[in-house]
Every structure is written in C-alpha cells, then in structure tokens.
Image (cartoon, rainbow, N blue to C red):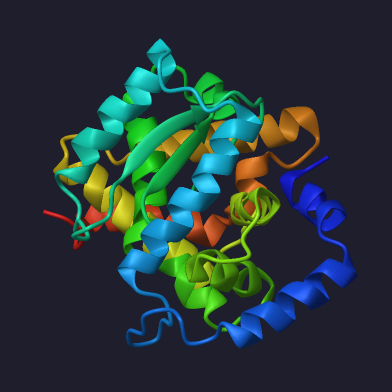
Amino acid sequence: MSLSSKWAVYCAPARLLILAVAAFALSGTTGCTKGNLYSTKDEVRMGAQASKEIDRQYHADTTSPDAARVKRIGDRLIVHTDQRPGVPYTFKVLDMKDVNAVSLPGGPVYVFRGLLDLVGDDDDALACVIGHEVGHINGRHITKAITKQTQIGVLLNILLAGRGALAGDAASLGFELLGYKFSRDDENEADSRGISYAYKAGFDPHGIVRFFEKLQTLEKRSGGTPEFLRDHPLTSKRIERISKMIEMQDYKFGQ
C-alpha cells in the first residue's frame, strides 16, 4: 500500500469534517507572507511535527554509512544554496525499497534506500537529487500550494495552533506530505535549483541525466513506474530542458 493510500484509509470522512470545523475556528493563527499564508516558522514547526512521526513510523536512519553519505552531500550542498534563515535542514535515509526522495517544508529531506541502491556510488547523481529536494524547500512549494488547498491545511492549522493535535494528526500530515505531488512549474524550478546547487558545490550536474537514464531503464525493465517518477513526472521535454540548462551553464540559483 502506498503512503497516499495509507492516508486515505487513516482519515475517515467524519474525522475530516471534525478537523475542518476545528481548522475554521483556528484560522488566522499562522503568519502571512506574499502568496503564502504560512511563515518560515510555521513551515519549520510543520516539518518538525511531521518528520517526528515519519521517523518513528518508518525508522529513519541517521547512523549507517548510507545515512552519513546522504548527510555529507546534503551539508555540502546547503553551503552553496540560497539558504533560508531559520530553516534547520536535515538529511536522513528511510529504509524503504522505493526509488524515491522527498522533502518536507521547514528543512527535512529523506532519501529512500531504493534510490541509493539505484544511483550506486554516483555521488554527483545523488547530489542532484538531494539538491532538487532542497529546491522544493527553498522554493516553498508545498506551503504555497496548500495555501490554496484544505485537505493538508486542515491538519496543518491544528498542529500550528498547538491545541487539539494528536499523534495521529502528525502522522496523517507526514503521510500526506510524503506522497505530495508537485506541479510541473514547481518541478521545473526544483530541477533548476538542484543542478545549480550541485554545480556550485562542485558536483557534476550531468549526474541528474545519468539518474534519469537509470530510471528509464528501470521503468522499461520492470514494466512499472518507479515511485520517483510518480512523484516527479519525467518527460522528454523535461530532460531536454535540463540538458540545455547544463549546456548553457544556466546556474542561476545558489552561490
């Protein structure tokens, strides 16, 4: 069962109705910035609440050689990104076979074991993937989107209000965020940010092309769509766009 399916089973319609009423009563408790109802502090709190439950449910790894590698690359990238003050970036491994990587608002980044197995020892490819996820965080893509939505926002408002929140609410939010699907514009921006960060940190941005080629091979071999492609749709135009950016050295993000 996928994480998004777990969310659907977990949250019954009656429960959503109760949460919706509570969220309405608690509206206006978050900070407000242009195009985004949620402040950076809100995002950090949101990520902390959700990641705590994700770490517990999925046994996040922070001590293995794989986890040390992910953290080392993540920390190296962060120095060369357009860092957001007050955001505590973290990099962890989830011991799951899915070929995927995800990020939460407020700093948490998770790389799945299946993705590490696929990239092998290609640190450049891994850096581009992690950079892409950091790009979603720095672009504030999730909270900009959920400003216009209610399903995630209902849980978020309760958690941010600091009252009536249960562990189950945090778990639901975590599951929903892990299965979140970004818009094409957000994916394109995260691609741009990811290869810019990787390049400026001294990695080969062609690593993302090699990663996509492995994904395509995996898709053909298995006859199914890898999780990363379900969350981050791969099209020929997207690959062409990335390749052109690399050719033109269009690395406008980071430092």
